[in-house]
Image 1 (cartoon, rainbow, N blue to C red):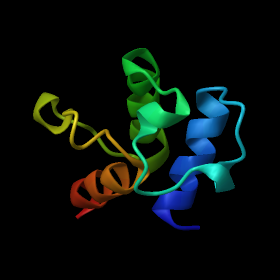
Image 2: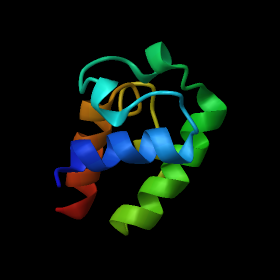
Image 3: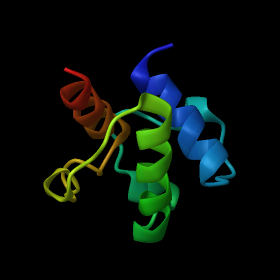
Length: 80
């Protein structure tokens, strides 16, 4: 499973969104799906656990957290 698809499932399951993971598009901003800053904090913790990475404060920006694609790119950079 791709990082993007894993993220979509995680977003729906961990944030309790009333969506199917397939409804989330890679480039659409997460705020469009009702994800707010509080939910993003939960998502950051979930990503660190699932992908076994650690985010620094500098990694957490509106740009890196704006979409599934941006999150996947961030995860890949941390795994490299």
